[in-house]
Length: 153
Image 1 (cartoon, helix red, strand yellow):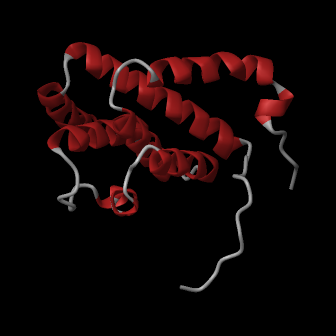
Image 2 (cartoon, helix red, strand yellow):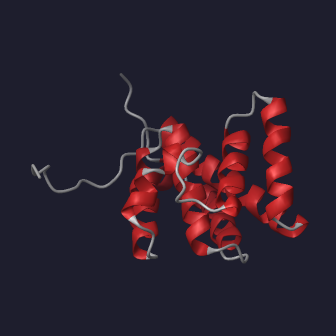
């Protein structure tokens, strides 16, 4: 198997505008906790361990509960998420998995009920940014930092 370059080291100057875009979008006024949940959900779908590692850590630092993070993959079945968060998760899934136009229309209807038109654009840009990072990390097999060895509970 061919070793893949770390894109951040190989072409960081090309990736810097994407990093700045992601930071700008994250600071555009959506709730910080919601932003982290969006990043985690898209990263779960895309199987991006590097982004999951980073954004779970960031969500916890921002006060997000472990239980909500654990249940994010089952947000439809869990009562722990608000209607606004559910709409955002549905939109995240619809834009991360682009094949289902009908599902995307249903997801948009929920988003339109919970988010203003400006917030809808912000939400969509946030989803676009995290999907871009997921694709870089998964494509180049960027790994997350090591962690302590697993200890039995």
